[in-house]
Image 1: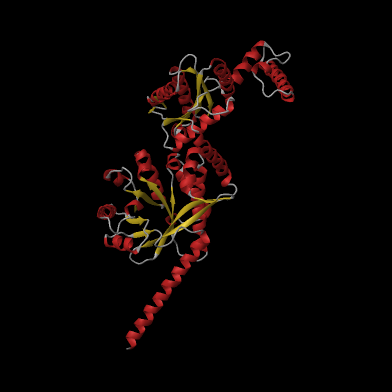
Image 2: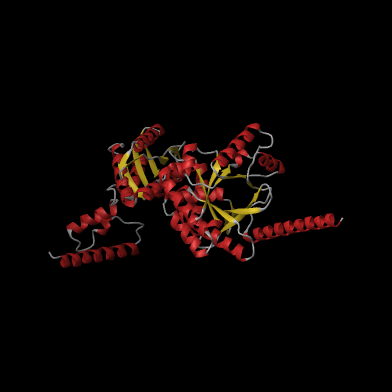
Length: 507
């Protein structure tokens, strides 16, 4: 058979299948299976087998797909009801798998998913069923178990299996996962009144989400109390996915000042979400959500673009050149396109690179020090200032710090909160300030809320401050007015000094 004949033959088979799907959709049946599809008149034997494979098997891993898994769950539910057995539905979500795709590429990520599928199949019983939900999510069905202990043992076995290194992309990769378990039927861990496969799987997925919220790398049985929390989280994630295009995200700005002169020399851009129903949402709530669902990349890029655009607008409106600082997330840094994002933002806004500062954390840089040196060196040569944020809370060494081309060292606010009456915090602040100066860096303290804080930091030689003592983070228009008011006050003070000087000279 020629290639052209084969192509037309496949088209004919697909046409018959489509006709059969339309026929089934018009019927009163709530669903249909692969067997229903292959009943179309004239579909040949080879095509029937191909159809069955396509609609029942995950093409990447060779495991059962979601539709097939639901069928197996329904069969297990019927058996439990009939024979008074107990079963477990297990939802498995790989932790930070998107980072592996970012580091190694999707092709290597797919290879790893195949290896994971093989290991999951090996650590289950013959009567268990393993399926791939899609992406980095897997499903397991364990029928005929004795109790919750058996399901917990299975979860432990899965975690140990995935923790063993995988050789992929020339590297060794160890994985953790978040596991949610639903038992049926069982008073302590089951779900009253829920018997359909879709709902059982949904509640297992909700439980896995709760594990992720608690820090990942663990398992948990379903608890009705978490259902509402996870439902709200999923709804918020859906809202966040359209927040950018709906212009619901906004940047607030908090000033930074020279500790000796009081002059405002910069500002930090801090993201907020103006939710149409819930009002202003803190980044503490939605940034972790953005990181877990992959939205942190477009949001992070938007923050850099908008901060550059707004700073250029401030300058055009007559404000002095102030350096705007932007927080870079770990996921954004590891994606390895940060340089391109920064260049594009500066290019579109026409902002001078010296008016932009990027804030990075110790743990972010130490995740891959070699990569960090390369990226930071290129950004530094481009003229962008680089700040080490939350210093003192990570695990970087002095030798490592010396390798990075950093301009600014930022003392974490946890050391500032009790600074006026805590000798340990004073000693820590003093040590950080001296370390920063010894490396040729400017040192700034965040979280400064009182005159006592500022006076103590000034005695220890800190260069700059940021915090509620100067101002809370405010919207762009309010920030612009704040700077104008400070400039007017400084001008009035200078005028008074000049008048006093003139009077003294005349006398």
